[in-house]
Amino acid sequence: MEPGRRCVKHKLVMDIKRAGRFGARLVACGYSQTPGVDFTEVYSPVINDISFRIAMVMKLQMNLDAVIFDVETAFPHGDSKEKTYMDCPDGMVTFGNECLLLKQTIYGLVQSAARHNHKFSAVLMGLGFKRCPSDPCFFRRSSGEKILALIIFCYVDDNLVIGKRQEIDKFLEEFKKSKFKHTLEEDSNDYLSCNIQMDPETVTGWIGQPHMVKKIEKTFGKEVANMQNCTTPGTPGFKLLKASEELEMIDDDLKSRFRTGVGQLMFPIKHLRPNFMSAVRELSKVLGKATEAGYKELLCCVKFVLGTKLKGLKMNPKMGPDGLWTLEVYSDSDWAGDPNDQKSVGCHIIFLNGVPIAWTSRSQKVASLSSSEAEFYACAEAVREAPFVAQILLFLGIPVKTPVNVWIDNVGAIFMIEHRTSSSRTRHMDAGGGVSHSSKKRTS
Image 1: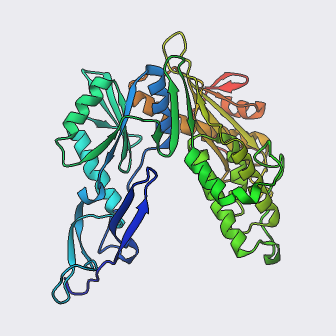
Image 2: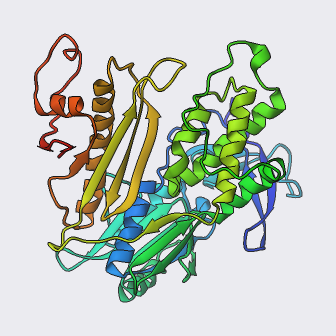
Image 3: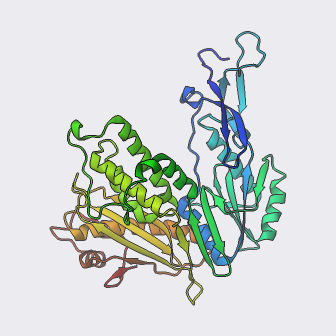
């Protein structure tokens, strides 16, 4: 080992997989690595959840097949660019102060995911795939000049292939020649912990997340068992306030449970449940200074989720008579809706052929002086999201109907979007965002 270097620690991890299989793996302890010495680049992208829903709509609309292939022992395939030394595992015969020099990355190293993503992407592009410029984990391969044959999106080592069955089989035969070994799952109904059900005959689909609901029920099920059923995810119109004094805050055990609950509730929102994103946004504001009232609101939201655990994201895409795919964007705001700092809350939701694919609810970064200004900022956030969706569709060769309609319900905001004029109330705003108007209740 080089002078001045230290060895990375290791441990043996054993677990029971969801399918009931027992697994054991020797992993490195990434926390013992030295930044700049044992690793440099660590960022590894994963598939965007918006891209995932777009692909699901596409699969349903075009009646495509899908399979999941999991790369076996993915991380050890990555090439290590740095010299990383690790302690010898227990039971290994050594002589003196010997250690291991890792030629490949292993599980536990902080750069392992980045190295795997780099090598796996290179293999796919070597097989004729093109990477989406907007989403680095989205790949497509064409048959002929512009005819889409296959799409693949990657979430670390879990990969979903969508296309016609003949093209999928052709790709899998080509992929076998690479160094990656994989297992194939013909049932594509369970991906990213989401349960996906599709009926090609009626062109309808449904996405649920039963695994995460079970985790939430395991954590809070006994605590909310005797609570009255909640018809809403939170108390209507109720705004959470941070504790102004330490005496108002809940104890450390409840703080930990509060943060755990908010973290668990974010997963269903990410993939399929926009109906309680505003309630979780309210809860996330007081993570460090939660009060008894905030904890009760958390339990109310948990009770609502457990009471509606059979609900999910319904997909019933409908294409227009012109054969073009349509995008509809809706935005709204709550002026000065945050009592802690008087900032407004903005939200938007985007529909693709009538299916919700993107949604957001967050406090705005600036304090708006009027409700029209708050609506204007919310509309700007929504318009900023729409090009990403359009770029994904164009990458897939899907024709998009233009202009894209953005619907808002504030006449003052529509006027500011239409007219690039300034006054004493609006001269601090950049109204030249390139948003043009189509009617009194919408912008395009």
